[in-house]
Amino acid sequence: MQDTPLPEAFRRHPEQILNDPSLNKGTAFTREERDLLRLNGFLPYHVSTLEEQVERRYQNFKSQSSALAKHLFLSALHNRNEILFYKLISQYITEMLPYVYTPTVGEFSLQYSLLYTESKGLYLSYPEKDNLESIIQNFPKNRVDIAVVTDGGRTLGLGDLGTGGMAISVGKLTLYSVFSGACPSYTLPIMLDLGTNNADLLNDPLYLGWRHPRVQGNEYADFIDRFVRALKKKYPSVLLQWEDFSREHAHTLLEKYRHQICSFNDDIQGTASVVLAALLAASHKQGSSLQEQRIVVLGGGSAGIGISKHLLGHMLAEGVMEKRALQSLYIVDIQGLVTDYLDTVPQHQQLFSRKRSEVDKWGVKNHKEITLLEVIRQVKPTVLIGVSAQEGAFTQDIITNMAKYVDHPIIFPLSNPTSKSEAHPKDLLHWTQGRAIIATGSPFEGISYQGRDITIPQCNNVYIYPGIGLGVVACKAREVSENMFYAAAKALARHSPLLKDPHAPLFPPFDQLKNISKGIAIEVIKIAEEEGMTHQLDEEKRKALIDKIYWNPRYSSSLSSTP
Image (cartoon, rainbow, N blue to C red; front, side):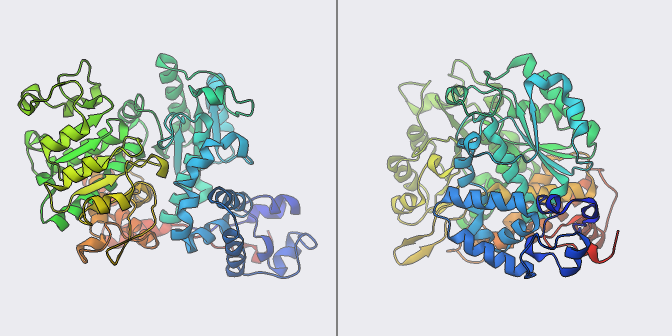
């Protein structure tokens, strides 16, 4: 298990130690440490335990007046004392997750330039394109296991937030450390600032990013290429997570670079994998299998197509013929149902485009604008997934029509943040007389329905990507394969409370996620063995690989001897 040694602290001035979040223990520095590090006089007399510090910070956290204030309080603690920050949120993870990440991180991203205090990570801007390699080479971290990179082009469901997207990279890596033991010293959030098309940001005198319309075309591709080469040169074994890229770039970047640098796209593959896990468990509740479902996806961007491809791939891996599997998947985008009648169908949607011969039988008036409601009436879906960032898109008319044809409709309004959710779970329960199987993208409070307290599970990528990262880093896999995500989904589905209790939620509570992530990592390592990316191991050696790199937030005792 990894510890956080502090030998370099002996060479620092006391104020430097107290201002370095990776070294600072605050009031927990022991008497011996205070003597050795010349900290006497810089701290109150009492020596606190980590547990006392956690309780003190927790009381302060609870006194914050708003969600954003709680996020800023935790961020300030992160900047001051890394160990205490991670210990606090690990101990109160269910309570604090909404403030560490979605939905509050979305509010912070919107005001990033105004609320910015301290730099975390690496900012790479287009005007510095000729110096990318030297900038990365000069970055002080000599080891990075996991990096999360964004260009802020499609931040959550909020659109182009430019440099504000950096908050998402920071948040994702925070959850890596909490749920999969990624040592914060070996993680790196990265912001690729290629401009913004957000007029409000361009006109904001406080905006911290490059005030220029987004770079596109060959200039964009060249910058990304330079970045990937430079990052891999400095950190050849890094696992790179692509985050919040626009639909224009997300699939292209994933396919171009997944074999050049060990990488994956969480919006595409992570979202898809956690949805697959939810559908496997929900299908069990219905007494059916995945291939028997009729699935309608609202949203044809990176998340929607990623989900559809992932479900298709899983069915193919299970022996279902492609033609049969494709019959169960329908994509509804901005213009309506994706069909061959449309003037243009984007390349990433073409596989799922419905044939004219099928929709001709429906008798609709306008084949080029087949609405979601019309699709519901014609297809009679058993599953409805929303990744459209259209608040309220799942109307009462749509849901009541769906509920006519299936006893337990599976409905996932997954758009983030809460303000972009396709429906409120309370409405979904009332419109289906409590029969719906629900999972949401953002957290919602539990609901009381007909004398029953119902927990609303969050279909959050955090159930998947930390375990993927832990397994890949532990066995040093050279790539992240689709089979790893299929295995992760099946491993997560086995932990669904719904399998044991028909009234339980689809997903386990977050306080179980550390152990679940370790289980997912084991399955990832097994896939890496099968695909020839690492040598064959027994179960004990797989666990040993994970334990070797797993980090827990605890103060180092390495100052017990002089340097």
